[in-house]
Length: 219
Length: 220
Image (cartoon, rainbow over all chains, first blue to last red; front, side, top):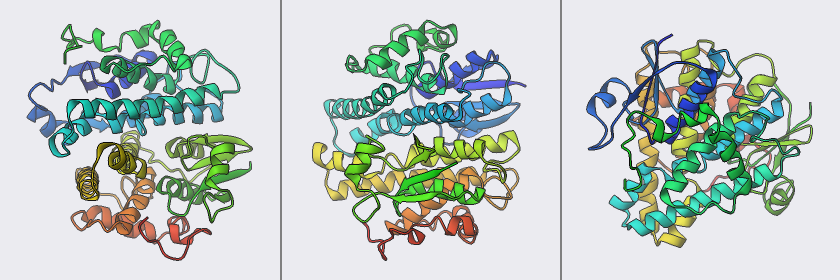
């Protein structure tokens, strides 16, 4: 099976998929899509008309949406499962990931930020306030979900990282880059630290992608 | 297995889950949340979900949240009919279509976002309408385009039977009707909506067929 992942070093949904592929030990071709100067026309025309990242191309068939890609990866490849075995824990791990994919990421993403500035009179400070509010709103809920676990496992919902952890780590990278104070989320930070020590996570980080420009902070 | 679904008649994420349970033929207790419900919002926040969001599924007393997690749980736990296509690429496309609704349409246009935009960022009702229209049509265009690009045009979104894509689409289109959004530019979506609503599993999950439906669904 030939796999190509269209992504970008700093593409948090893509980082989830990179991590999942790394955990499964699946080789893929990393195709960096530069967004400097807008989405390239050929990406929009030939790969993803919505122009969002990431896209996963499987023997020429393109699939979009990181959650769909990760479920596909889990169902297709052998190797360690990226879900807990217990059905309730599986549901909780998925729910945690959706708390990021539905309740945090879409509300603070660059698409919305651009729209606010272009059409709703937001200043940069307004955008930052918006970002901070929703990030904290979401992270408080996630920390609470972790606090309520009957068993405090080393990773979110298992003794190994599962889909919850895969979604958490890129969102934290994003929050740090923007300068959000994360000190109110000790359980989240502890899990982030454990994940960061694992090659599957480390190798998926923005700074370890071939298109990483070296200094991200000014961008 | 004892199942209780905390939802409300108009709760599009809950409607997805009701439809999934109906397709599987699973009995569950409908726990309406709110002033006319069997549990008040305050009681729900205190005892069920501190975030206050619906739906929540109670499985023998264990609470799980987030409709996508609930539907995958239902798919994995209960026997056929499956809520996913068999073909691996079609499965991924059905899930991706559902996620466009769950991640790119629904969260941007919900009430809590409106409240925050109006109260904290001085946006007017007219600003909100502009925002809502832009994102809802942006989403519907994406969905229609995903259907247009199918190599084989199936009876439902990505299969000859309804799958997760259809489960997410029907509540979203119900919202469009309630909020008076013109969806005439999306013929493929409308065609699937009509086919799904003719099915008992979808019909029984509709807002007007829930026990807490107040008789008319005014925008509010």
